[in-house]
Length: 304
Image (cartoon, rainbow, N blue to C red; front, side, top):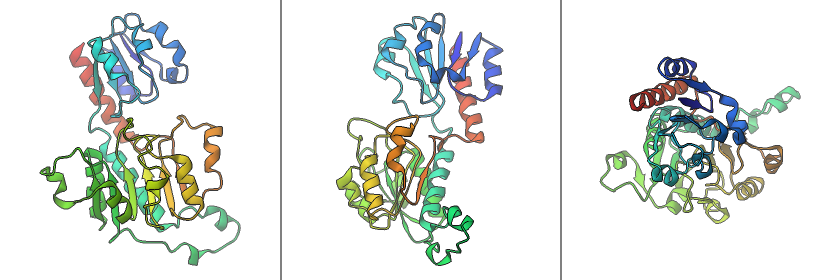
C-alpha cells in the first residue's frame, strides 16, 4: 500500500494506483495527528516538506520500506530513525533545480529594479518615475551561500544576465569544475561583495541563523537578499531590523522560521518596504511538479 500525504501530479497518482493500492490524501499535512493510525500496511509513504516523518510516526509504520520526498530538502524527515529501521529515503534530486534557480534570479531582478511593487502608489494617482528607475542586473554581483546543484544553475542563469558570480561553500572541493566561472570566497567575502545574495544551504545546527545580525551588517547598504533555501538560516527579526533601518534594500523570502507562516509570525514583516513573501513555492511550478512526481513514482514502483 502507498500513502501520499501532500499534493502530487494526478497522472502519477493514477499510475501508482494502477499497480498498488494507493491512498491520496493531500490534506493530511494539515492534520498530521491522523497519519499514525493510517500507517498499518503502508509500504511507501510519499510526502513534500510539511509532513513530519518523525520517530514517533515511524513507530506506527512497521511495514514501511520507502519514504519518497517530492522535493529535495530532508529536514522534515528523521533520517537516522529511517536508517535504523531500514527505510529508504528517496528525494527528487534535480527535478526542481530549474524552478528554484529561476525564482532566485527573477526575484533578484525584481528587487534590484525596484519598479514592480508600486501598485498602491499608481492606483492612488501618483506617477513615481523618479523613485522607481532602479538598477540593472548586468555587471552586478550575485553572491551564493552554498554552491550545490541549485546554486550552480542559479549561477548559470545569473551569468546569462551579465552578472558576475561569487560563492561560498566549504564542502565543494577546490578542483570541482563548478568553480571555473565563479569566484570562490569565504562567507564574509560574499556578503561584502554581492549586490544580490541568495542562500542555498540546508537547515542544520551549523547553518541556523548563518545570516544573523552581525553577518547581515556586512551586506552592502543597497544589497538585496533572497532566501529560497530553508527557514531558519536567516534571522528574520534581524533582517527586518536591517531593512527598516534602510541598510538592506530588499528581500524575497520563500521559506520561514514558522511554516506555514501564521498571522502572528508574519506580523514582524508589516510595513517593511521592497519585501516579497511567497509560501515555499520556489521549487513548485506546474512543470517541476510533473518532473518531481514522475521521478518519485518511478523510484517507488521500482522498489515495491
